[in-house]
Length: 279
Ligand code: GLN
Image 1 (cartoon, protein in one colour):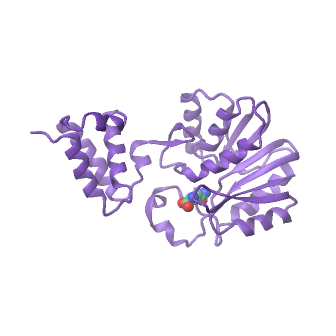
Image 2: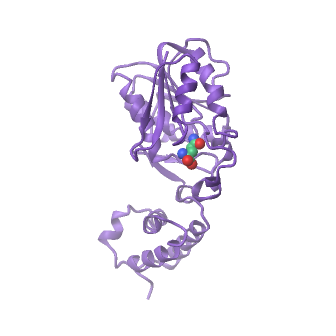
Image 3: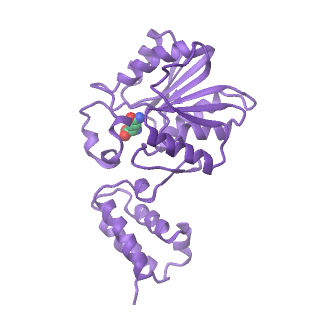
C-alpha cells in the first residue's frame, strides 16, 4: 500500500523537526511543490495515495531541507507582498519583515504619483516589483551589482507582467546625475562580518555579498548615504532597511549626511527595522 498524503506529511514533519522550527509547513510546501498543488489540497484529500515517483522526489527535497537548505531555494519560489517571486541561490530570499519597507514607501507616494524611484541592491526585484505594482505610474529602477540576480529580477517582472520596473547593473548610485531621483529605497547588506548568526539557518546558503557589510554591518550605508543625498531631488526621500540594533547609528549617519526629519520605524514584530530621511 502506498502511503497517504497524511502519512507522508507526518513522516516528513517528524524528520524535519530537529532542524526546522517550521517542520510541518516546510513539509507541506515541499509536497505541494512536487505535486504542483496548493497546500489546501492536502486538507481536502488527506487519504489520497502518494505515488512512488512523487515520494522519491519529495524525500530528496526533505533530506536537503534537513541539511539546512532554505525551502525557497528548494522550490525556487518565495511570496513577497502577495507576489510569487522566483528566487535562486544568486538572490537573497525576500523576508516578510522587508514588507514594512514597501509599506512605508507606498505611504509616502500618492496614488497618482509618477515618480522616479530607485531600489538599490534589488536582488530578486522584490521591493522594486511590489512598489511598481502598487504605484503603476511610477517607474522603479532596480540596481544590483550581480548580473545573475538581475536576470532573476527581470524574469520576475516579465512573468508578473510588471512593465514599470526595470533593472540594470550598477555599483550603488555611481553614474546617476545629481538631483535626478525622487525616492531611493534599499535593503543593503547589513550583517556584521563575524556575526554568529551567519552560521545558522537560511543565511548559510544565501549570497554573502548580499548580507555582509564590514565589521559593524554599516559599510554599505556609509557608501549609500552621501551618494543618495547627491542624487535625490529637493523634497525626495531615502528609506533603508537595517538590523535590529543599528537604528540609532543610522539616524545619526542620516543627519550627518544632510537628511532632514530622519525617523525610525519598527517592523511587525516590534523591532527597529527601517529609517526614513528627507532632502
Ligand atoms: N534580514 C537579513 C538577516 O538578518 C539580512 C538582510 C540584509 O543584510 N539585508 O538575515
